[in-house]
Length: 227
Image 1 (tube, rainbow, N blue to C red):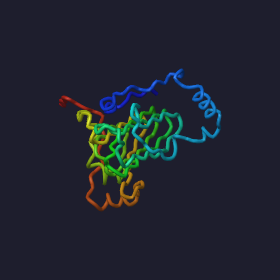
Image 2 (cartoon, rainbow, N blue to C red; image 1 turned 60 degrees about the vertical axis):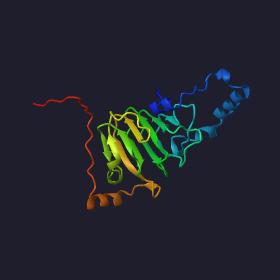
Image 3 (cartoon, rainbow, N blue to C red; image 1 turned 90 degrees about the vertical axis):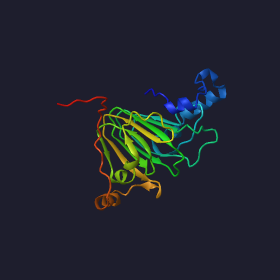
Image 4 (cartoon, rainbow, N blue to C red; image 1 turned 90 degrees about the horizontal axis):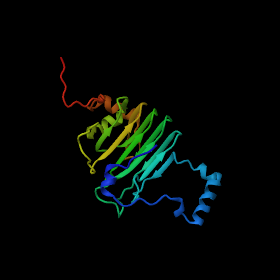
């Protein structure tokens, strides 16, 4: 699946991409790659599961990129600091792609300074994303999207849904999900560093004054006349 780099990365980092030409590899490097590829233990390290620390990668289109045909159950751990060579107007950029396998992504963040942009692009996958409770920014999602009680209680007030006229606001977070499957947003509690407690958040939503889950619409009219 071909992926274009995020706009903020193009603007903030216009350094030349390193060459991927095999001729630029040394003989030692080629031999080392062959040994790794022939080692069964190399394939046991499943990059689509477990935890992965996201780090700023200068000169790359994405700080994290994963495009696999199998199910994804992954925790993306964002750094609590800004890299020394990371431009101020450059968010951490992540891409996760798939075809039809289910996807579960947890965005783990302990500090709001590590702002991010996440793009999830699939064909028909069902996608579940745990969003940090201190999220503030834009969420682009299809009509078949639902929000958990924790997301509505703690995050929804700071979210602009499908806002296409906001420009490129690098001081905010941004999530883009493209799929024909069902999308669910849940909350990752940055205070307890854990996923939301569904029963606790459901009770809070029942007995407290919390906002109502919005209806997602895909219409974006510049002019509308109804008779």
